[in-house]
Each structure stands twice: as structure tokens, then as C-alpha cells.
Image (cartoon, rainbow, N blue to C red; front, top):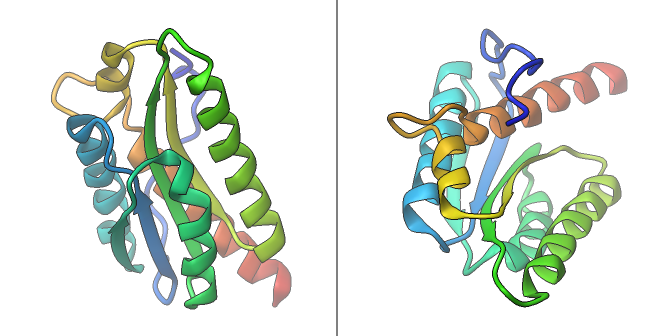
Length: 157
């Protein structure tokens, strides 16, 4: 795992920021853990937010566009893609990653990337912020989105 060297999270004031958490529905236990981690960070920072669910990670980019069109200052995108025996994993992972990158650049607003691309379910359980998890990628994605939104607000004066 890449957990060593991760930046510290928490301790920020995001009052006034409007955030949308967009999450897929695949692998419910892992995704629900990611959402809980994002909520924990958002609750602690004073940001306002809502959570919306889409069928899967492929649908995250279009929902992120709609969130920004609806006035969001930041989006936290959460999903789980587990490698199988077909090329489907590569297509969905690439589409979600490239799509979310494009959305962020086109909108000029941050998308916290909490899409887990995994070889197996255990890797997701280790990263979902659940009891016994080694990492909390939902919390990290929310924190990154908030910090970037604050930087952008400062840069734009």
C-alpha cells in the first residue's frame, strides 16, 4: 500500500463550501465505508454537502458535471472497480479516471478522487476506512477536494 508518505488530513475550515459526494453502488460494503470516511471529514470542516448514488464508476463523471452545473464548489467521487478476467476493468478504470480528470479541468473545480482500482476485494476492505482498514480513501478524497477548493478560492481572490 502507498499509505506511507501520505499528507496529513483534517484541521481545516471549509465553511461556505458546497460539496457533492458522488458514489457508485458496486461493492456496497466498501463503498459505504468510503462514504462514511468522506462524511466524517466533511462534517468536521463545516462544509455543506449531499451524497448522491449512481449505478457504477463509469457514471461518476457525468454526475460530477451535473453537480458542478448545480453549483457545487467541489465533488468527491467514490467508486470501486475490481479486476476480473476480462478487459472490462481497464476500460471502466480508464473511463472513470479520464472522465473525472476532464470534468475537473473543464469546470476549473476540484474532484476528490476516491475511485479504488483493485486486484481483489481485500485491497478495497483495507482502504475503505472500515474497522481493521489500514487506510481511509474516502476521507482522503474528501480532504483533498476541500483543500484544493480552498486553494482555488484563494488564488481567484
